[in-house]
Image 1 (cartoon, chains in turn orange, purple):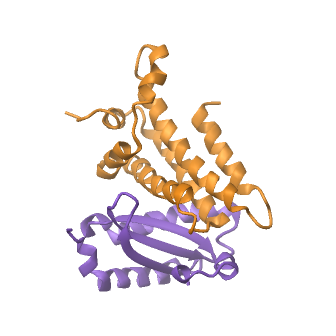
Image 2: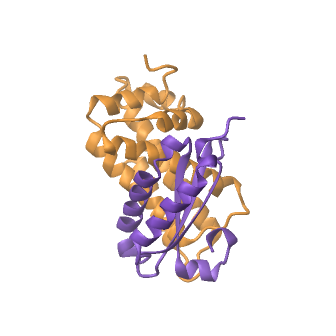
Length: 148
Length: 104
């Protein structure tokens, strides 16, 4: 199983723990993990186009959260699925920021499960559009300084 | 600081949300919203949707939240208002168990 798929599975596992009274630590980690699942999916897809496998992990480290968010936030595609993926990325990054850094915010299981659904739907939408030129161009823009 | 159009269109937004509440019943109990800035400083509209307990069941939750998110994004046209839409969900039972002003 690919790392991003494992992360999505882990997010679901964490959110489902503690049946009666979910622990905030598990819910927070679940939100954060759901974001990282999508983050790593996109990175994995982008570096997959790099022919030298041994260099892919080095290239992967050049991706920056804020840069990726900016690109996703500016994406206005004719393909609803691609817009869905980029909107999910922006959504999840905001939630991840709250989950990781804002201890004043309490999370509920429904709130967290809906975040995981967002990630999971983004995975499905990405798989439908990933072979399209526009999706491939998006991957490049996620780390390139300028698209053109 | 440049303020987004959404600030001056709050009456219009309130009407859209009110219509959405009616349209989305019985799955939705109520919707609360506010305009603010997200973690990067971008202007955003934070929408908090309280789902009925029936709509919050695990088997239905995924489909329902996806439909509501899509619906609200289309209706709000947040792009035109200069804000990013963030939609969050809690169940009715959760808001009773954990009462917070922003969700009531």
